[in-house]
Image (cartoon, rainbow, N blue to C red; front, side, top):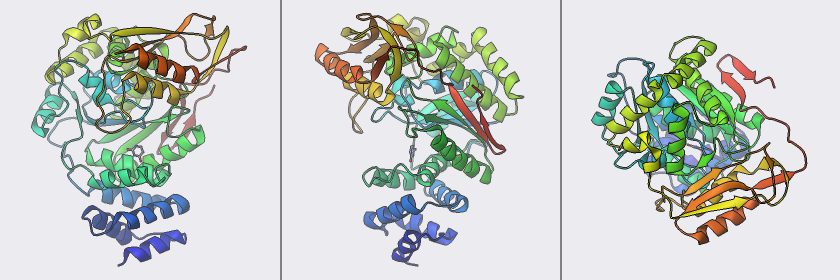
Length: 442
Ligand code: URA
């Protein structure tokens, strides 16, 4: 078999065989296939696509390209959750403790923030003392004892994706449904959970800018999950505005605490309840309506918050900051950003809001950049709200005023103020299961 022929076949619109896909992944991971041939194949896939069988085969070969996690020694159903990334998305930290407090295990590997999107690992590490680099035995022990644990990716998990993702990043081949679906699902399959809930973000702050494209990506991923025997459901959730009011690591953990106390912003609370309900549903806890009531009860009775504290303590974190969020280290500078005129906020370019938070120090432009945990944005107004000229629409937090000034410049371009109230949009646009697509009636 020759890589040249595989590239030419896909270039001409052919369907790759299982053996050809395996040959590519094995050869690329062990260094026999060079980057230039792998990038030619990625571009051919980008232009010609892959059918459902090819996509599933690519996913499986990638999932098996390195270590895999075997969670079978942990009793009970293990449910994983994946978000395609957004701004202000702290849902894992709300949802994992809620479902764990109801007996569903969450053994979660998460990532760090990059570009305009934040990462759960950075948010967690803003809690003093907390470790996300636990070895596998300790990770399993916490999942058994507490019910949930969130760690960074360890070991040699899916090396094919590590290599391919960096290659796609520099060859304009990221935004391709079979390549995104196989990249995400290979990591979920290798991580070993029985069921998978996907949160596919849609809108200006997401990879997928339209609901239709998000549904297509969700369908491809649900199909892969079901194909390999993992029950999979996807929610298409709105990312045309940041989720919740706080953007930035410690600020987001503070909002997690208020949400688990039942005092969080409505949008974040509603999305978290829907995500938790779907995880509970996947674990066989009942129909969606019942599961949503169960999730809400765990907020009302405080058990979700207690579970979050238990998880943080088990990972070495100082729970005093969760009991009193005023104890989080404060940014040196607090900088209110006023509205430029009277009117209604008609749109928020969420990607630009994320970039403004990176400018403040809350994120990183490239891998390995340092992060300021106390930096970020608290939104005082969001899409649909009436504003008066001069009143604060946001407050920035950073180490110095210069950062705030340049972030304010970016942020002003992100917020549109118009004369009329914009049409409301749903927080959840659709739910995709093996049975089909349920669109939210609105
Ligand atoms: N997230 C991933 O993990 N992979 C992609 O290809 C895109 C987003």
